[in-house]
Image (cartoon, rainbow, N blue to C red):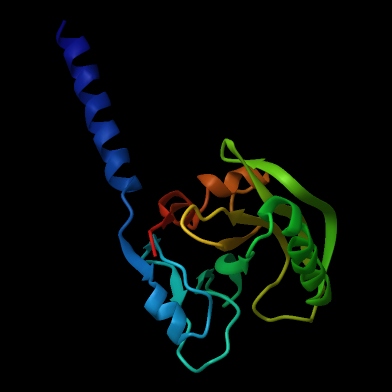
Length: 206
């Protein structure tokens, strides 16, 4: 009986230790319609929790940018190992699933023109984290010598998250180098440092 109690105690201690290890310190990032307007971008309202060990680049008023913010994990060699960007698509009177395909193809072409040699190309209504989204899933290797920031082979998971409160939908461009414990695009939901961003993203009413 004493052995059983001891084993049970050890398991509880180990479980609590794992829970403490998994706890991630985060900061909440909020984009409001007022902030979007200052950036000369379509109005949208969302919040997201970002692990503090990641680098957040917020858009600056008066400075041209193509997103509502970008998150990066950078290695000791200054090479980006993970990236998460909040792009957007505005569709007044159009369908996200049908008319957004052209936008996804443009992103794919941008990756190619940016120096990536793509191994596969999957665009359409794809399943991710138990739901179906307009998405682009691909794998690309940066051509040697073209970039100091992005080196090697990367998984890309680009997901258009439908906005129930408006016509501006956030397009989440996720990227992770293949040495970060990722083997499929589904791993973006829970295997990476940036997975917290996906899990905590929330639209608010404008």
